Image: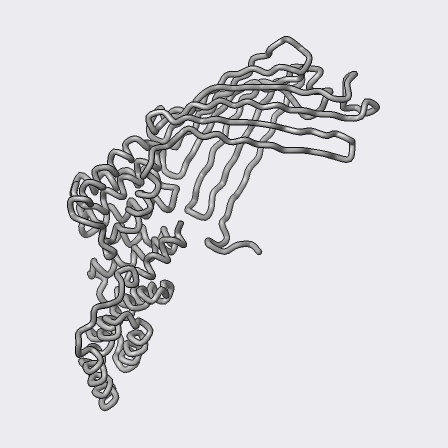
Length: 425
């Protein structure tokens, strides 16, 4: 996703189609090039020449000319700051985001009060996945103008893409909409914020309002700051969710002669966007040599199971999954009840908790199936997300087995994304 957004940012000028140049454009450029050649220190000619190249979409030539001017200007001066901003924008339009960020930073050291340049840098950092630095710059702007709806909307989008500050994203988006209800950037941020906490119905309703606003204004213009996000949401929300089915099959073999197969069909149907119902039908088959430890009189056995339930949004960022079903061993009339309950909640930024309970039957060998070995479980987990790349998860599982055994398992996992957009091989 971030790669797509970065590409769209880099080609925004191309999306507008071929540039419309004045009839005497070539003559003007020739004259400016001659003037620049005769007097390389003539900043007025240099500035006009670089602007001409930018107008034609020749960003690399514009960058070359601007860098010539920067080489002769002292740091901290207004003329140099003017060229630094032009350099940053041309680098961005040329798709050189890393260099553009350095140029924006150099410019903002001289003129930190330039709100528009700071917003451009925030968007660039957001597209590159540098969410922490983008949020810092949002907070810097909000310290001087806390009621700035555009910056609040931008902060909400940054937190949405970071993925670990959903509550803060929701608050920033709601505040932006309250301050400027007709600001498309704020409306886009609010749609994202609704989705982040599972309020998909509200997200669709908010996007429908934005769609109507865009339709009244005419077609979506390529240069709009919310255009990329709008198109992504339009594609995602263009059609309501439909019932779906997912088949699955797996096979297992080991050196002890155990052979297991698993067949499953899961069907889901959404309900009012925020909830869904599901039905799961499965069959497990296991076989092993009679002479081994993994049988109890038969070399093969199978278990058929079904479960029906749903996942429900009980509060923003709080989901409850509940299912009940039955398990039946092959050749036996008795039907054994099963159940599963899972509660997942993100009550505060960065923290996600889950609690679960259930009953299930062990289906790994013919012996386990024929002896009706089952367990009741109580489990819980917590995840803390440091930022978009790092997270730490801890889990514990307590089981009470039908053969009077008890077990406790636990795990801790640290997850680090080493690099975005780059495959391992």
